[in-house]
Every structure is written in C-alpha cells, then in structure tokens.
Image (cartoon, rainbow, N blue to C red; front, side, top):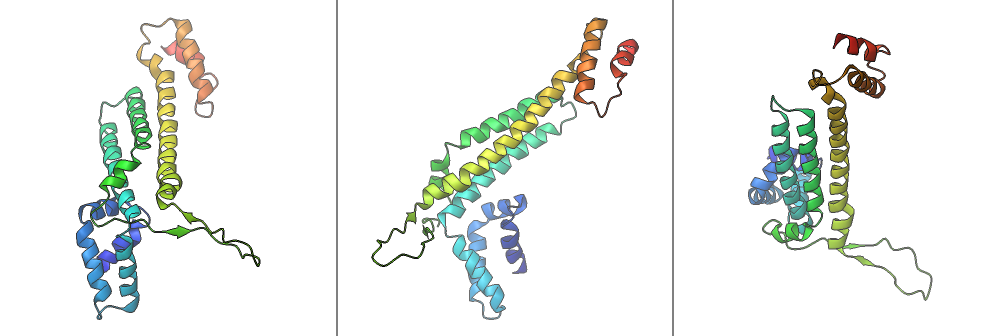
Length: 223
C-alpha cells in the first residue's frame, strides 16, 4: 500500500520509472487505490490521498499525458542506447539528436491521436472556470468556462514539446559544431600545413579557455 502511494508522489515529478509503471499497470493501480480509499483500517490521510489520486486517474487529460510521455520515453531511450555505442562519433550523434528533434516536431500535430488513444476509463476532461472578479451591481456575468481540451493542448502539451525540441536542437548544434571543428584531425595527411594551421586556429578560438595561445603553431609543427 505504501508503494502505491509512493508511486503517486513520484508521478507528480514525472519520473520515467513511475510513468512506465502507470502505463503498464494503469487499471490495476487504480483498483488498488480505490481499495485503499475504502479500507477503514488505513489512516485517514492515506485514504484521502488514495481517493484523490484514483479520481485523477479518471481524467482524460491524465490519460493523454501518460500515453504521450510513454512515447517520448520510448523514443529517447532508443536514441540514448544508440549514443552509447563504442563507435559513435560527433557527426552521427548530431544526426541522431536532430532526428529526435524532428520527432518532437511531428508530435505537435498528434494531439488528436493521443486524445483518441487515452487510457481505458478516461472519458472526461476536468472543467475549469476562469477566476471571476467581484462584479458591480447590475454588471453581467462574464465568467468564462475554459475549454479544457484547448487548455491542455496549448498550455501543457505544446510547451512540453517546444521545450524538449529547443533543448535537443541546442545539443545537436553543439555536436555538429564540434564535429566540424575536429574533422581536420582525421585528415591531417591530406591537408596542407596552411590548412592545418587555419583549422587549429579555429579550434583554439572556439575553446580559448582550454587551449594555449601557441596551440595552432605547435600543433601544425607536430603534425
């Protein structure tokens, strides 16, 4: 029982292991939480917390986000495994990360699919109302019921993808730049002394804090 409650707490932090557990055992966990919430032998605080989370599992928005995160974790795990290969180079690393960024871009148009898949039992969004200010006498009621579907798509789903894509593109470009700077090291025999010196100079200028001022000249002599 304590394990299930810990699953609830860690899910709020979106830990990968927790998301996978929920995805594979969604119905079982929900039944377990409902059982805990009705068990009079449990502490009141535990029953209330279990009931609260069981209720949240019924919401369509949580089913959408769960299936969404499962797909993201699956794809990023595949990329991560590929990056761990012994023969991985900077150029290939950049290309793999670029493909991951393209995948995130593709998912921007897949919200309807996640809504359709969802999780069994998740049929309704939670209805939210805009915060209503105090009205003056005779002023009409202008309270707006927010469209939960649009809200979750524009304020949660898309921002998650935008942040992921931005971060991955940044890393991909960093590896791409590094690959271009270091490429000459694998072609020293084919390059002239002048070309080696120019490339060594670019490398030094990029990593000024790591390479000595005399690096280009010393490197070209040693090569």
